[in-house]
Figure 1 (cartoon, helix red, strand yellow):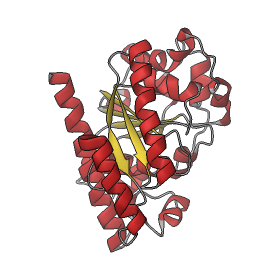
Figure 2: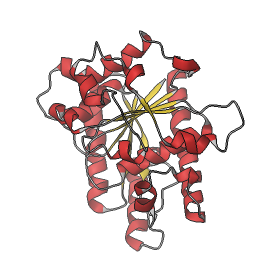
Figure 3: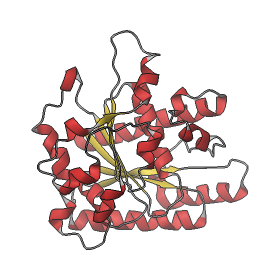
Length: 282
């Protein structure tokens, strides 16, 4: 099971949009996936068309992590029904969500203890003690954690539980500088708390091909970050808000622009998964 945090220390770069795009690609590829919405704003939960009824949200599970029953409290994404209409009979997709809530914000502070940092790790470890094949559902192969745009407690809780961190950046001066700071933060965090943690790569998001500034910054990012800068980049999409407002996956939205974006996320997901497998073999 690969656990990947999607992070940016700068807000407004489309981190949640990238999380949703990768989740959509995983659903389309038939990869059993869990999305953990660790951002107190819970935008990923809304975008994944989740209707939680009686289940604990991730904030409540973090409160008592060793007693949390993650498998019993995840909620299927509403996208699954959309995907099932296009799949062969008998094939079942899995895209579950540990719903976000403002409650998790109580852990988004800088003074967490080492024990607090392991709260999400303990919640995930509980999957090994619980029935993860409820109603014949396969085990998760991928966990995507949507982090808040900061290096406070929740992001550090996510990094502690993760194998790798996928960074999201816009091709702009402040975002590029923020990405450099995030990479340094990952290295410092790895040395002190999570020796197995590594960067999965950098996704350049909201790219405008006609912008000279974006072209310049992409070239700068290539020089600064080398192979960590993943391709393809994700183009700015005028109807992203419409897609997310409708709580639909990019793979099930009509139009050439959505199709192009879906293909880009398919390729990015493959690279993220392949790099994780290579790291484990290494």
